[in-house]
Amino acid sequence: MNRKGFLLLEVSAYAFLTILLVLLTLELLSGLKNIYSKGEAETELNENAMMAQHFVEARLYGASSITAVIGSNRKKTAWSEFSRGDVDEICFKFGGQDIGIYLNRSTRKLFCTIGGNRPGYEFANYVSNMKAEKIQDESGVRLAFLLEKNGCAMKTEFVIFIRNSP
Image (cartoon, rainbow, N blue to C red; front, side):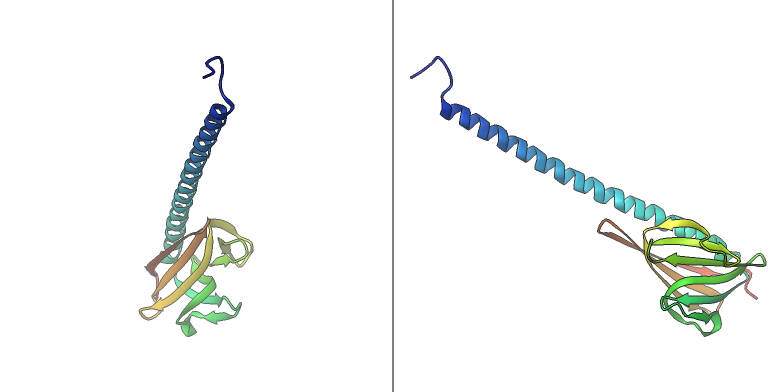
């Protein structure tokens, strides 16, 4: 036996074990990064869903009436003729002003307009779909938002009764 140095076979075995250890560590770190990214996306979706819900609830709760909806087909329908469906915009009266909550499907953002002036101001991200349903003699609305980011999806649904409805 040669005791003065390493054999080529020993060096090859150590190199193989080192490479194997590095690859396993990288795989573990990649998995942890994916878990972190998914958790971060779910957290951000949850924050945006809560923000959108609180924003819309505050506006519609104090509104005097919902006047119209604009469907995903870009057709404007009077609230009295609407029952339920996918919508791009909900128009209502708030403090004597015409207000709109609209979904820009290309950017997946919710905006609020005052007096029909677009683009308005953004208040939520990652919203890919908005559904509305008229309830209880036009004095309330059930809204559902679908939010999506990085392969994660979240649906939030809530009911609002218009306090100042005639």
